[in-house]
Image (cartoon, rainbow, N blue to C red):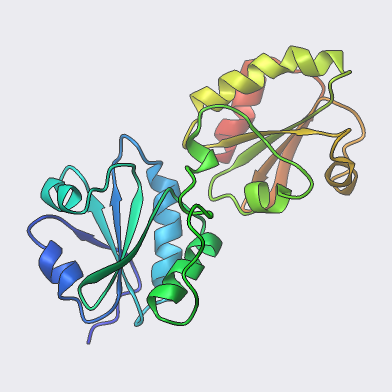
Length: 236
């Protein structure tokens, strides 16, 4: 039996063979280029395919090529993950998780773990594609920022900081402009001092850029949108 360590592309014509008659459990992913950040999704699926090579098949279905299969399984909100064992649908989850979030579902598919609770975290729309800054805290900074599958810009700010309010529209516009390619987040240093202290944020506003869980750049003080955008472009 051939071992697949990369996602397989399928369509309506190959769905039966690739998914329902597969010799291994299958994670079938319905997606659309118009609704899904492709690079981020590909990154998660490639990691999953390598991690579970020989145990699970990862099958991608672009909905424009698989409209009948999409309708058959009512895959409305994309991306949607359907988990098949012996040709039977055993679970489904909406949204695009990280590999860490996807693992419990695959372990359930392989009958090595319990079924994950509904709504966590793969049924939640990925923050990377929302088009506006997301609020992060000390408690979820690692999960949201350091485990993100795309570059991240974090705005460290406080309510009493005048320059922070001046830079806020810039951050909001960049979140819209780079939706799906960059995650833009905001962290209030008064409510969440531990993260700011750990990263050595001494004055605000400070914009910190992350890629692959590592800080790669930072800007201290209010800067025009073009200057910040140039730093983001360097990360992509």
